[in-house]
Amino acid sequence: MTTKENIYESESLIVSDGCCVQYGEALAIDDVTFSITKGKKIAVVGPNGGGKSTLFKALAGLIPLSRGSLKIDGLDPLKAKGMISYIPQKDSLNWNFQLSVKQVVEMGLTNKSTLLSFNQKKNAEMINESLDQVGILDKSEENINNLSGGQQQRVLLAKALIQDSNILLLDEAFSAIDVGAQEDIMKIINGSDLKEKTILVATHDINNLEDKFDEVLCLNRHCCAFGDPLEVLTKEVIEEMYGSHEDMFLDHKPGSHGS
Amino acid sequence: MLSELLIDPFQYEFMIRSLIAAVFCGATLSTLGTFTINRNMGFMADAMAHATLPIIAVGVFFGFSISELGAPAAIVVAIFLGFIVKNTKIGEDTSIGIIFSTFFALGFILIKLLNVTINLEDLLFGQILAVNRTDIFIITALFLIVIGIIVIFFKQLLFYSFDPIGAEVKGLNINFLNYLFLITLSLAVVSALQTVGMILVLSMLIIPAASAKLITNTFIDSIKVSIAFGIISSVAGLVISYHLDLPTGPSMSLVASTVFLLSYILSKSKIKNR
View 1 (cartoon, one colour):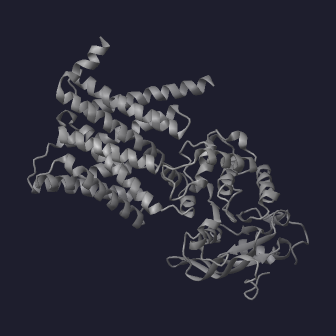
View 2: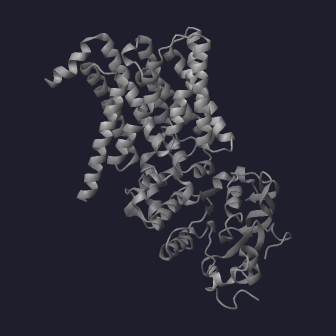
View 3: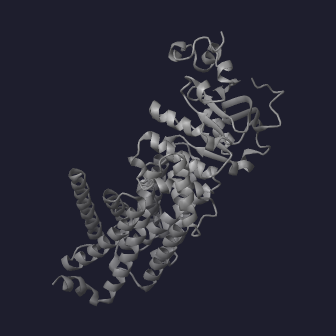
């Protein structure tokens, strides 16, 4: 488990030291401390309103901290924007637009200097490579609205991958997609292509996290626990996050999570 | 016979001026309409048109024409609307509604108090046949500015419109893009006040874009078809109004509605035949 003393390890890529975010008077996250080393795959779990999205937004430099510090490779999130790709929750995207898969992935290459000058040929190669990585190259011309939830999530993953950032933040990547599609996405995340990437996934599914992630960050406005899922996801921690709803988590391997 | 019907109206200079205004306004509005309908900003656009009334009242009082006042009024209204919507916590539609009605009411009061001579029917429903050379120059300039902005910032505006959070994380200046789009939309709306008026500008903004969306599969195609529908509706409305001696703005609007109906039928038959 991470403590205040050992968060500044030399290999730490993301360090949160007593991080607090406030929306007006309301404290969204309070005194969150953890440290993530390069290449780790992290599940961020907790109830709705527990601060998962807030933490991601703070990491992406979208909201300021009210107290504490957050460093990405030693930099403040605002200065580390190029190091992060962010896949927001699907309901924050505007699905009214009839966009092709290719167009959505291409957005990953769009930045503030993208005006008329656009290297179409080089872009096309990169888009195809990125779509190939997530296994939907054959869908490149399709309207994104015609794809399944799992395929749409893969398109968004391709859009994040094309940015070639070191850190990927996936906010509620598994909401409204079936178990098979979740498995497919986890295979991509844990695949050799993304070995070097540090990936944080906010999820509500806390079953068998130890099979999919290196570490888990348990949030309920404060950090309930952080570390190896087998060690930290105890009955007490689950209760601290979700209240007494033990029966909701019957799939946990019995005895794996301590007393 | 058909060619005569089409060519006959344009033997008059005022009709040629009207034709130029119709083409440019139709193209400008229908281009922005595609973004507007997908971002659910129709009400915002309607408010922009109405909120210009007090500025027009004061401007006309000081001797300016409606066309000359268009661009500055559009910019002021866009920035004001954008600021209020962003900084109040009462909901976007509610704040737009408050500004819309307040400004429109203020406009009428100012017209009365300043004793300004404005033909309200022309302002509300347009009077394209009265456009002069200056109006044409302004409408053409606004068309070029609006299309130029859309072409130059297309990728950024599309990214921001589809995924505002992702765009911000990528370092796009979303405040700039927000106000850029609002100002561009506002410019397009006021450029059409003379053509179709405050009430009907919304129809020429959203109906061609909505019709195009029904029968196309991609956003890019919907822009192309929307521009075609916008120009066809404007020009056909102008020609029909000439031959049947009908008001031009409402004629354009009804042609656009007819195009929408046909597109709807076509889209349904496409689904049926699949």
